Length: 124
Image (cartoon, rainbow, N blue to C red; front, side, top):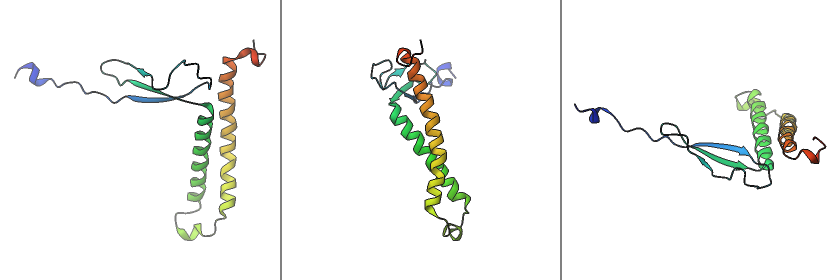
């Protein structure tokens, strides 16, 4: 059997999508949809840039929903246990972890913006 018949053609790997938080200025450091060519046997990287407000909103909603469903699921798997749950109390309890995570994300994102604009904060 010839060598050509034994070797298969290399698979084309699907591109890997990476989302990053932009600075909100639109200065074009990394344009949305940039494709990083990684090589023949590695997937290419496609960059998706989102605004800081979008990133904060998505993270807040994610933590809120995970906490909400965790609290409802923790009440019991059967419908008879869910009948006695005060949904307003569960919603309020879900807001606390989401709020703490929101504040943590604010510190993270604005810390990165502070390093970009050091003179605005007096950090020279």
